[in-house]
Image: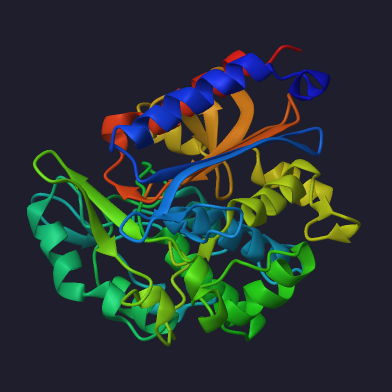
Length: 384
């Protein structure tokens, strides 16, 4: 079947064998991979455990912590409000969130008032100056730790605490992955008058049929929630988060826009297919085609004038409105996507009409080179 849509079944079998061996050698608890091309699910492989101790096998119903793969979803939500004329991309965010009216910038020698306001475009492209507490500046990192952002009761409280932390650089002058999308999530709440959970459910998840995507796992779905795992050299794979004790199964009021969602592989495929279809899925329009095209343009050319060597992930140099774009600054590809902390990862290849998703629950996972290996196998499987 895969050859009919231009993918080599032999290459996909080799990919399965590689990933299965990692599970068999106790380097990975379990893994799911899925590929869609021309709107067809041409590959779906699920191998290993959702729960090693109880020998529970991963399946299509398995729910994963997608962490930062929440960010593209929230970015789409914000752009729905853009379509409604609720804001302009280059509006100062302080126009809607007054707490961000006067922001400061941290340097080794001083803390000074930012020269320009933060724009909404900069939040969507991670060029606003917000970090995540892992900067080259120990004192700035300490401010993040003291802020206890993730103890916030809601998005308003999170943004108020974040507003008191200096930026890592002047807005628009560099790229730094950080908490910008958390502000986007609060902006969705301010502009829509709904909390982020309600907005996403009504405007994205229900229309797209994403029936297993949540901030809080419902009681009836807890049995599908995958155990979270950690890895280190001495102990190997150990449990880090169980469904019973997880914050994702407790009563929640903080809907973290930067990384709070859980989802299934099949649900996230629906979200990706909507984007590849330029905003629609099964005759349901989520965004206009021109809005999707706008989101997938590179929006950091001006930033490169200040800092040519932006520290975006290896092999990726552009950034749209919520998505990284593959390639180099000179030759960006029509391939975009993002990943999550525990190893979840997706790419949408526009030219090849291709979507590929990898789902694991292991921190860290860089020692296994899952993402680069996955991409290489998919590229080698393309035969037209």
